[in-house]
Length: 184
Length: 223
Image 1 (tube, chains in turn green, orange):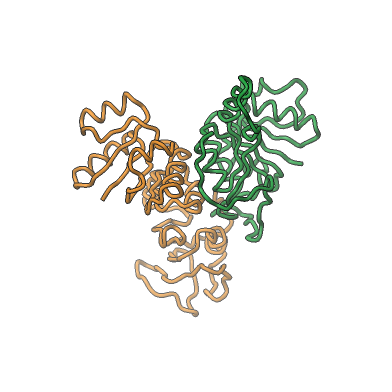
Image 2 (cartoon, each protein chain N blue to C red):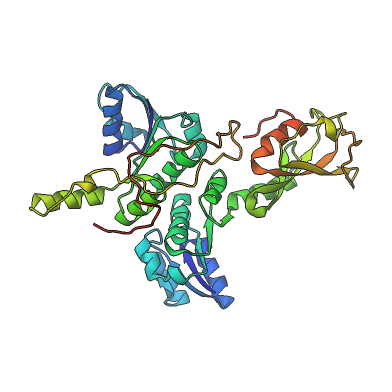
């Protein structure tokens, strides 16, 4: 499995360490080299300084042909842009974007990008701690319920992606492409 | 016409002033309070100190009745999200995004942004027209950016020299139509033979540009 992780914060570094230890070929990208200090000791993967929302950078790092792509920077919108590049330009089959704004997290799930939302997770977890009912839904990745626009071939890329590629879903959920805005 | 402008930097500020002067109804969303207040002091209470990326704030600004949402912040990712939220959440008929990284243009169009404003592309086009280089010059974008009008200069290295249009294999969606030779324009005919110094006007699908470059200019770098 080849995995690309954009953003080497606590979450990105932690996940990079976990997946590399499990045998994945991991590349983690961050704008700042000192972010790589967070990677666990003995990390066996690539750590590259660069802008993970830049198409050229992602291509150079082998986004084409990657199996998994995680956008985990501190910026919701940066993650949304990176994830959509991975989906549309590089046709990566499994993509998750960290989107801490619950509204945007739901919105982009219905646009075809699976999202994970720290805000929901903490609210649900703290609610459960004080005894409120919780179904654990917020603890999971919010699966894509809609489809993204479809493979997009870059205007200047020398290798044009096949127009028949379709991504497999991250999980099995499909409630149509409606734009729901349930705020937990 | 009701317009929502997102981003109160230099572009958003002047855009707001121009639109107001033209008599449009508009609201400007600028998330930095200080900056929002500064602009409001000058143009009045049409400025909201709100983040246009948040659905809730777009709703407050009346996005569901806006004819146009123009996202002109300095960050491509923010402009994309504003336009996608406006388009998919509020059914705004026309969304406009400022894009700094030219590589993002095609992706943004594909993701539903109706109009792309690219200062980088505009400056590049102006420079390219002033400095003749053996490259493809981008003269104009047609059909919302799907097609491009290009000028190719046939240099001494060009593989097209001595060949006829029928000898040149071009991808579908790409055609050569005018030859400029000695400052005279003429249609390209099957019997035309290209020579060094010619200029060729072509219409090409954006993704065919590399092929066109290879056939008419040669294998120089096209980043």
